[in-house]
Image (cartoon, rainbow over all chains, first blue to last red; front, side, top):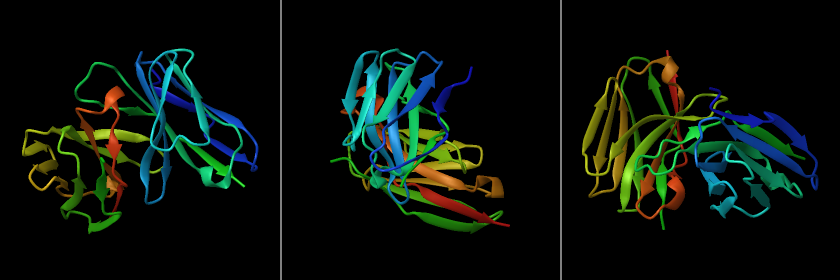
Length: 114
Length: 113
């Protein structure tokens, strides 16, 4: 049981390049999330999904797209990377139908855009 | 709107107690949480408290909730160097769809030997 895994762990992009971050979970969770973490700003929600084939915008969605084609995978895309997207990205998941929501986090992807 | 605020840094000596504070604005909270992030890792749930409770104790951890002042605190007794981490306060509310949590900025706890 690997929990939540993220690929890649590190990446350096040039401005304007594109990339996709992959999140996978093996806990059969319905809900999945993408956050970014920046110093002094905590965790900010980018996009989230409440089930296969559905996605929704979070607090800071601009410049990012997501897809949830399979229940276990949640992809985060950057179409044209900007230096402001330099951050640490975390994926998380949690089962549906709860009142107490324990989110399970991946180890993070450190992205630098030059 | 919903907002969760924390101070950014706290430094204590090994063996002392640490108190990390958090304020929130949404009175419709269902649960309030403390997550711990160790260096280079993702967040892990440390403890939580239901919104109709005042206090919860779990070994070295004590969570206090003052609903009137919308203030949450985490006390760590006999703080060890292994407690050095970033601690995030978070809340879930009855209005948040999809299990969303609102996180504070995180408090970096530094424990000096």
